[in-house]
Amino acid sequence: MLKSMTGYGSASLQQGEKTYTIEVKSVNHRYCDVNVKVPPRYAFLENEIKKLIKERFSRGRFDIYLNIDELAENSKRISFDRGLVARYLKELRELGADLGLDPQIDFLSLVKLPEVIKVEQGPEDQEEMIKSVQKALELSLHQLEEMRQKEGTSLHQEILSILSRIQETVVRIAERARVTPVEYKKILRERIQDLLEGTLEVDETRLAQEIVIFAERIDVTEELARLGSHIAQFHKLMESREPVGKKLDFLIQEMNREVNTIGSKANDALISQEVIEIKADLERMREQVQNIE
Picture 1 (cartoon, rainbow, N blue to C red):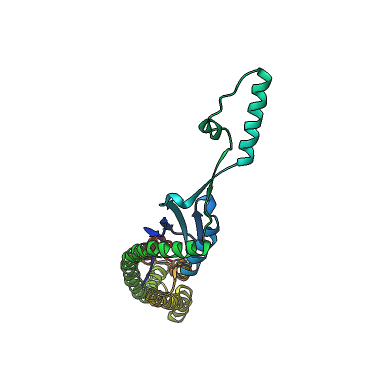
Picture 2: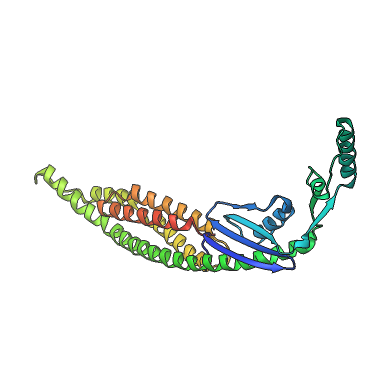
């Protein structure tokens, strides 16, 4: 079944002292383009996320947002720069002596001085974090896959409907192509008779030669056969479980090429009108295929 390239999924997962929240959005793209936004201190997770996406999908633009919340207060380490405190105290006492003042220095005032207190993030277990992100990402991608499959089913039905119309139009073109030489023979005979004004008989041999030349020039049998083959192949690809978006797009180009040739060779107003209808349907189908993985 077909899969759309448009989807969305999000999930939150609590692992130990952290909560991982991942949001994934995907839209159509010619290749697999992955854009990951993570907090700067967790930049090491970016490549892991990109790797997982590219292993799982062949096409689409993916925007992934990762947020990590710390749940425990002990995830941060607090320390004091004792050497700096000693230098502050020494300088304050010397300043007091120079000014003839007795500095009243209390502890809280001292620790409020710049850079005395240091708050540092505790060490990270990168391996465990990668495993946690993989789990959260898997939950998000499950939602995204469901949406892509649901929209893919809708696209499948729409494309089948368009293909059915194209096949019906091809049948009408084939039927019309069979009678066109006969009609041309009749019209040509009438024109010759009008020109001769009944003074001479129509040369049946020459007339037959002209009809054969005309029939060969407007013959679209091969084009119709190739077009039918492309349609059959299109149906087969649509049932594949593999990503087929690029192949379907290529087949539409090939069908367009055959239809253009039919239009240029047919030399018939009715066939030309049918060709216009097919080209319009192929354009509608191409727009749908652009969103298939």
